[in-house]
Length: 125
Image 1 (cartoon, one colour):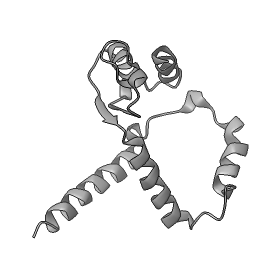
Image 2 (cartoon, one colour; image 1 turned 90 degrees about the vertical axis):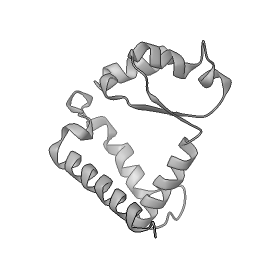
Image 3 (spheres, one colour; image 1 turned 60 degrees about the vertical axis):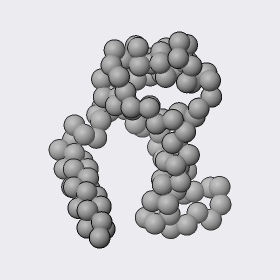
Image 4 (cartoon, one colour; image 1 turned 45 degrees about the vertical axis):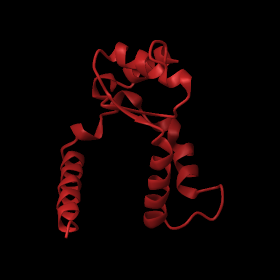
């Protein structure tokens, strides 16, 4: 599995952008010698942040963000997902860039991070 992950990261040109791994805590992922995370980290030639078990939290956060911006889901057929699936064949992977390499995206992320820090300290009464 680790070699497949590395292959996909390489194909998409994002292998050098990986900072963290989000995964469930099965032994096949977390094993100290043959766990997928350890093997991926070794093939990346750098330490990465382990977000063990956090993918469920990410799903909850994404679901909430989606509901706020797109309205609540009315069933399994979400129109935006259906449109994305239909458009998928038109996406050129060779044009992919990590968002942080696009100036407007990087600026928005940095603004969000700054605002999060400000709000955090503002709530520490």
